[in-house]
Image (cartoon, rainbow, N blue to C red):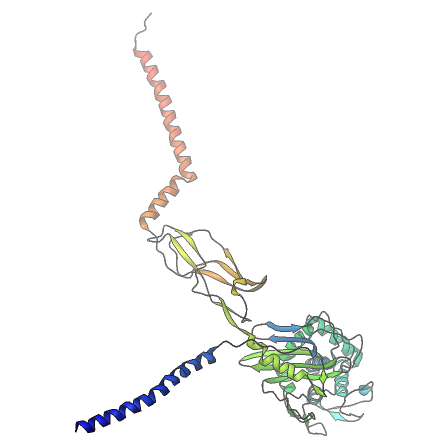
Length: 448
């Protein structure tokens, strides 16, 4: 029996010794994996070497996240059609009733066009769709005539609209986007135009469609030649479809290079990318890859950062007549949070406090406003909020009565009354002294 127990114990000991090294080597591996997963990732960004001009903008935060030559003068090319579509949509009263195309409307058409002929009928709505999806120059000219009576008058209206939008460095020459040395713009100006176009929901939705039904066109259905949105015209053999993209326009000329203006919704935020002067490399457009990288990579270098907390004590104010408190903490009314670079040194955030009072007098109530605090980054105002008290401080009855007495004793009224009383006493003593002297003279015998 003892021999059998000894054998069993020996077997168990051997098994345990065999398993022990395995257990010892596996343990460190299980703890190392989470460290690798939580290690901070190096920030990445899009390579802009194949684009002359770039601007990446976030709508929710009104922030330019990245830019290159954003204020440099460039040829707008197809970007002009955003203004053409916007003006036509705003000024043509009836968009659905078909009109008859005339030879005058087609005068001067060149470049890419649909192929309208005099006598054709088409609705203004389908012309706008054709303009946005196929970038048809004949559609642009017909819309110019329907809107302003002619191309020249329409161009005048385009420049007036540009002025209204604050596009200070933009000048339009034609409604098609055909190259003209005198027609220039900047990426920053085109952002203003893009935001106005974006605010028109119908136009923006049309520009983001893969295809649209156009009942007054012989084609019936037209497809978008923006490679982000459709593969119908893409003969490159490479797919550029990008689900985040929801609109805007593409195109270009030999002088302007690739032009791609893109709106996208990515991870809950909305962006606009302006790209001009894009290059073609090995027969492939680079504007799509650059734009997608900007949206996917550069946006990750930013995050919402709290620069001022509503629980943060900004300063303290002395309190007069307070019961059990001679000062009150001052807090921001709300937390200030902004979309800022992840690499930002928060010590660069500057806070400027503007107090409306230097001292409080009890009673003090929670929520009392005592000033404002503004937050700046590199001299630029990020935002501001009110400064408030977060506690109730009651008035001390004894201190209050003493203060009233003290205040009364130091008041002008009391001083006047005191002076009058003192004056009356002085007069009284003078009169009394004179009277007593006269009495003494009357009843005291003269000594001669």
